[in-house]
Amino acid sequence: MALTTEPGQAAAAAEPTLVHGQDTLPRLFRHVVRERGDRVAMREKDLGIWRGISWREYGEQAKRVGLGLVALGLRPRDVVSIVADNSPEWLYTDLGVMSVAGIPNGIYTTDSARQVEYIVNDSGTRFFFAENEEQLDKILEVRDRCPGLVKIFVYDMEGLHAFRDEQVMPFAALLELGARYDRDHPGAFDRMVDIAQPDDLAILVYTSGTTGPPKGAMLTHRNILFQLAYADFITPLREGDQQLSFLPLCHVAERTFTVFNPLYTGSTVNFAESIDTVPENIREVAPALFFAVPRIWEKFYSGVALRMRDATWLGRFAYEQAFRIGRRIAEARIAGRPPSAWERLAFRVADFLVLDNVKRSIGLHRARGAATGAAPIAPDLIRWYLALGINMVEVYGQTENTGLATAMPPDRIKLGSVGVARPGTEVRVSPEGEILLKGPHVFKGYYGKPEKTAETVVDGWLHTGDVGTIDAEGFVRITDRMKDIIITAGGKNVTPSEIENQLKFSP
Image (cartoon, rainbow, N blue to C red; front, side, top):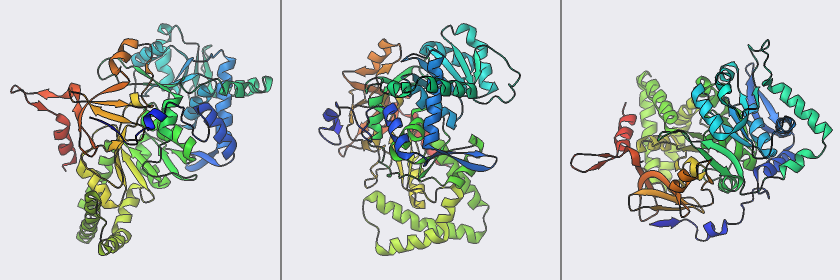
């Protein structure tokens, strides 16, 4: 069974998608920097105070990174790897490298030195950015076995001021080199921005490697801009809307939300101080849109449940009554019927007296939309957030289709499914039960692995490795990974994720 939500769109997408009139990420970045100037692009916390960084400063720093690398010998299509937690420097490097026709690639900060060595060599990385001394130590340990590596840069030199190494350069020194190159070669940056074409490789994203060594998924400018054109499927973001960045930027979902979507929407990215401060930071930022993996949503729910367990009897009673009203609204929405006037009035009262305080306690009182993805989530957990008054949708996709394939329509909720195909996306189920995808977001292939690419994309269809079904209304249900299916002695197929989701939601 094949489904296309808007007939003809997949064919029409043969033409490059334009975002703000631009057909590549470097040209889009240059355009929005000029348009937005001194408006705030991102914020980070410094000595307890949120400090704003303008689009103009963002563009200037990215230019200096890119031109500094060119001065050191970066060539078009050279791979540049970044191993760092989310920060403005990550974004300066990402867009700076792309703007001079290089290929940025993120590496998880939790990866071992051996894993870093594998990715550096597999990708042919020539330039390497390390966040601090800890990440620098990993690459120094293996650099003798990385013959293609030219230069290493360090964002945070704390503890390294006396350190000297010909191959290692502080990030600040790279910025100075880039500024000097810009003065000596006026107009060079704009010429480099225009090198990339829509079907060129834009970024590498390494898969987790659960079924073997990690593979570098090649995503093009066309892939990413196609997704940006439909970025407002949860809620349209506006300039000045706040976002919180805390999930790893080497994951395609966080890269999309933190780096690419703000180019389209103009929203402001706020960087969490650390993974430990995310609960505090989300309350401070109060994002308009929040994306998280199921584990984060489970922790928010558990935190509220524990607080209610320790609350006074009056507090517990008020919470239970307010949630009873919220559940009625949620069930009406799931059933596709408008709530009655009495239900709407009761919910406004419950929200004012109780539910808004619960949302404030987790920092989602201003959220116009929320999304969960990257792993299965218990349907009861989504029902709980809907009862709270948070517009949560489940989305589905993977690195190989640039992050998004299906999403729950806000006006047609079917819990237990991951929604319907996004515009321009075709979804079907193979005879073996595997979910297959087709559309302009399907990746270019695995870097340096044509045989793996040929196994994954057959006749334009991406073989996801996920088992699922599509019902008569087009709703997709993912039951498990093909490799995780358990076949009992009696020949029955058992999908562990259904059992696991029930266990996760149980107190």
